[in-house]
Length: 113
Length: 113
Image 1 (tube, each protein chain N blue to C red):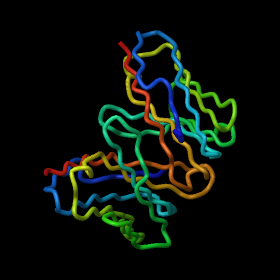
Image 2 (image 1 turned 45 degrees about the horizontal axis):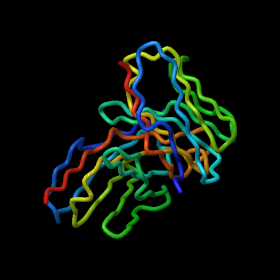
Image 3 (image 1 turned 90 degrees about the vertical axis):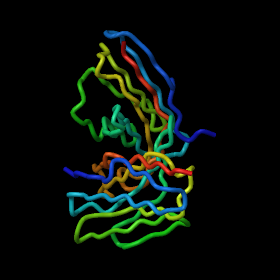
């Protein structure tokens, strides 16, 4: 089955700096890679996703890059703000029946004002 | 309108009791899931239902029994609760099995004493 590893487990940055979270996956057939943000006491929320036919995707201060050859993908947050503080999860799946999202272990991001 | 709603939000119960957690989604999604999040924030799939049919049943003790009366509802019943069952349980739904973003509920924090 799929195995997703996520690093670092905790990340502390100063407000305004950039943050990068990296994930690797094991199943070369995986083709869908979402990122979720979980705030305290809430469920994870989808913030951005990328499919394997695309190498990079941006949405305002958030970007995701995918390297299919190396089987890794990363989340980039620029100009971090205190409200970006949360736990971030990467995940991977094959987009067909019978395959679930496998989540990474999570990264706790702390943005210091 | 809450897209994926779980009840109750908190559940404190004694070992050996039987309890249920309810989940409803109003997104018209075909697939629903139960995830368990442990104290280290790791998200692990438990069950998945697609159009009321069980698709995925990970290595979960048979004390856990999901029930889907229709595709908008997926309830989780737990018999003979144990201390190790203490965790946050998340319900989620998606339009396509494993192929799109999940929408998560806000979680049920189960504490077994």
